[in-house]
Image (cartoon, rainbow, N blue to C red):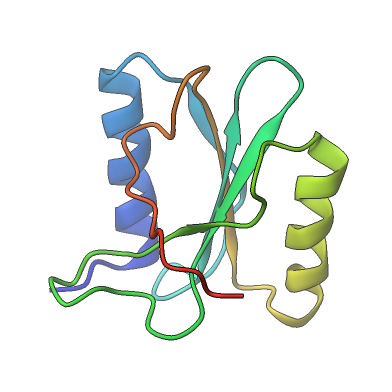
Length: 115
């Protein structure tokens, strides 16, 4: 069963809070099915940007899939540029920021090469 985007984001933020990570919605998208971008703030001025991969947004178990937009962490401006460009033609997208110094706040990252 696929969760609506608003429920999935609320659950993500609750899980992050329980793990000791701060998270917040930067841009509220469509409640039903907005795509979700996640900024991982490493608290050192660098960010990883997670986005849906090309193709299906869900795996065979119905879990949301994410890929890293960059090979290594980047500054805020570079990460935010990707999201702002996407918002120009998809205003329903969600942008969420999570603070995690050492990882991805428990989010599973696809490792296939999609380029």
